[in-house]
Each structure stands twice: as structure tokens, then as C-alpha cells.
View 1 (cartoon, rainbow, N blue to C red):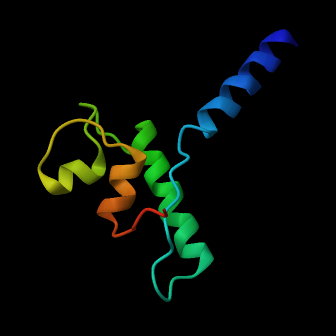
View 2: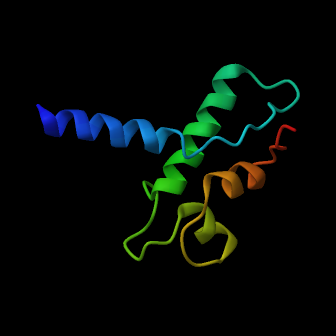
View 3: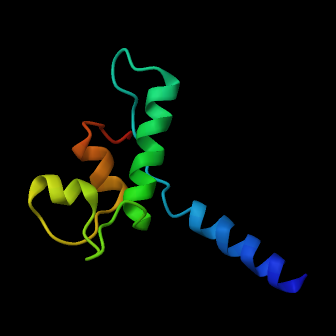
Length: 82
């Protein structure tokens, strides 16, 4: 039971890591915005990395390594909220 509490705490803290607010694009639905956010969270956590640890988005750009949530959102055309 104690391990479950520790695991829940780690999940809660990791969900706070992506606290940068981004503005929705003009004409974009909430569902489209949510899908982009989830995609970028996957990029940042390595869910879409290839076997060499390179993110899917960086493969398209011809770069190596991982990508942050914020960089992913900016590359998808989002502007950060003030």
C-alpha cells in the first residue's frame, strides 16, 4: 500500500512538470488542442522515440535526441500565454 502512495505522488509531481500554458490556435476545437497537448507530452516523455532515443518530431526535422513539451508545442505553432 505504501508503494502505491509513493507511485501516486510521483505521478502527481510529474504531471506538474508541464505547466507552461499555451494559447489555442484560431478556430481550433478543444479536442484538437487536447490531442496536440497529449502528443507533445508523449514526445517529452519519450513515448514516440525510436530505438535510438530520438523523438519522432526530431526525426522529421533531421535532429537528434529528445524534445521538451514546450519545444514540441512551439513547433506545432502554439504561442505561450503570458
